[in-house]
Amino acid sequence: MNPISLAVHGKGIRKAIQRGFSIVGRYGFAPNKMERALTQYTDILSRFDCRATFPIISLAVQRHPELIKKYYDQGIEFAIHGFRHLDHSELSYEEQREHLALSLQIFEQANIEPRGFRGPYLRWNAETLTVLEECGLLYDSSQSLTWDVLGEYDNPDYQHVLQFYGSRSATNYPSLPNLEDKLVRLPYSLPDDEALVERLILPPGKMNEMWLDILHRTHRLGELFTIGLHPERISFCKDALEAVLAESGKLQPAVWVARLDEIAAWWWERTRAKIEIDMVSEDEFHVSVLGPEGTTVLARGVEVDAPTVPWTGSYQQVEATEFTIRAPRHPFVGLSPSASPDLVDFLRQQGYIIEFSSDRKAYAYYFDQPQFVARHKRFLLAQIEGANFPLVRLSRWPNGARSALSITGDIDALTLWDYVLRMFGK
Ligand SMILES: [Zn+2]
View 1 (spheres, rainbow, N blue to C red):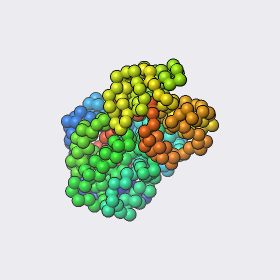
View 2: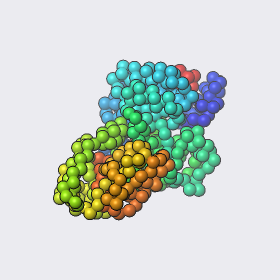
View 3: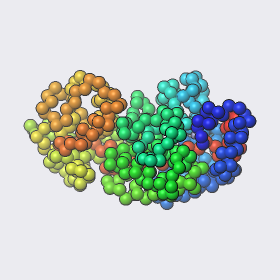
View 4: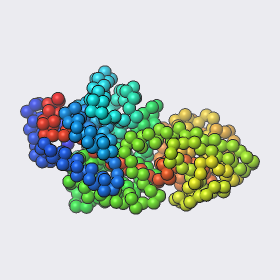
């Protein structure tokens, strides 16, 4: 789908129909074709024992509840992709509330519980987030993050669409969930299928290479790769999807492949894990961690009185959540009492164990920034992970996984008829 064409030019009905049919022609859309695409998609997923998230417009759920329920019962997550396929950054608070209430009603009638949202065209505004939170959704996955993997294949058309999406660069911002008040924000990774198929002229095999590149980078950094692959493009992109899923199964420490609702729930619960540190003596600390199932402690440069297995770098994975360690200095992150609350929050969300203290010498890592903004995050993570000082922390992902991968695909319409109605704004 060409978001700019739809948003900017999709005004006249005649034009909309023409454009609609031209796109229909291009993808060979027809009734049942989408169902075939969904079956092909889910067959690939089950071969890799993987489940996915499909954000879907609510009108498509209303028109085809049984079909959607069939995939839902197979373990596919359906998130809300708008009541209709509209640019939410252009909608008021009241409009978004009304649309979301209608969506929730439709999902409920279909016996499907939605946990999250992705804005059509990856666009949103502050009211979007307020409304999602007020309506009790767990996550939003509308903010895109662009990985610099294109090299010579980059072009102005792609850059233009990135601007339209309000995309941020993964070079400057970590690709990680972020718990903002009660809403988990999950980044969407670009280039997605649309960018690779529609905007960039790539030789065969290049798409696999680019997605594998993002997979390896997120694995190295311990971050999240959210693949966007619209079901209608599964035939074009299945090789790339299979390549990523096959490779993710080989990487060590593991890649956690999960749906967006599972990732959001994990992030929410792990951030709230209770950690107690008791000083037994000058250089002995008793650590006790109470977190969700899968909570894992990582340690480096310290002696642990519990079994450990090598993780990555100089980290060991501790096979216990209650144990004693010996270390010459506090192997946690020391923070000045005047450190920015945003810094404290960010470190906690990463699984670092924090102690407030004015004694900076007692810590290998000590921060006192009174100001902390999103652009500082990558640098801070590199500072902590790039050095080898003694540290005990929680693993960001469950069961000691090193990074996370989520397969997602937006469904804008299920049949040709839905598609035409969507062009009329129905
Ligand atoms: Zn869409």
